[in-house]
Image: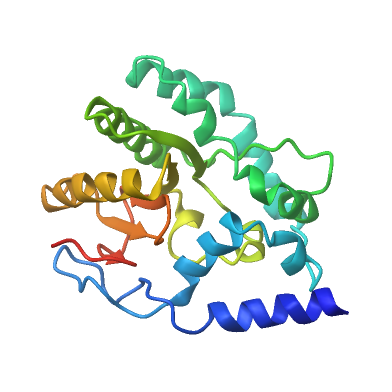
Length: 231
């Protein structure tokens, strides 16, 4: 009972006082700041490792058709990895792109069942250019001495996306990745470089979660930043 109360209190807290994204139409001139707690709340759920508490409140199970889409993507995993490797000089980041956040493994199992492979590949091959470009961006950041720790999100289909508290307009479309850097200061360094890339229209959106993690929205529909604005 206390666990459920604590989880409810946490969710209530996340719904207040967060600065996030999801503005209106989504042109390059979209506002830097708009209100939507979901983008920031999703990251907090994952990084704080509270998914088991949220899961105790109930977990939406994937339908047969939703599992079919996931399995269709899985049938293409080797093709994706080959394409990613070919375009990124065999970057080891390609393997992490197709592995959902390890900290949400219990939520993944709750959504799809314990026998489901812990991998997600968007079945629409037209979306693959987004994570592959994101891997190239990480290569450019590391070439500048910025220390990258982990990719922990690419495609998050429903209802898994909903179960981890994700916003509906980002990861379900396979247009972005979340990246954890070696420290908050490294994430700040990366953010400054990503802002330059955004001004050059190489990426469309950046989420700064106030920690060591950033959202890199290569092809996000809404072209904005949240958590912190580009100067």
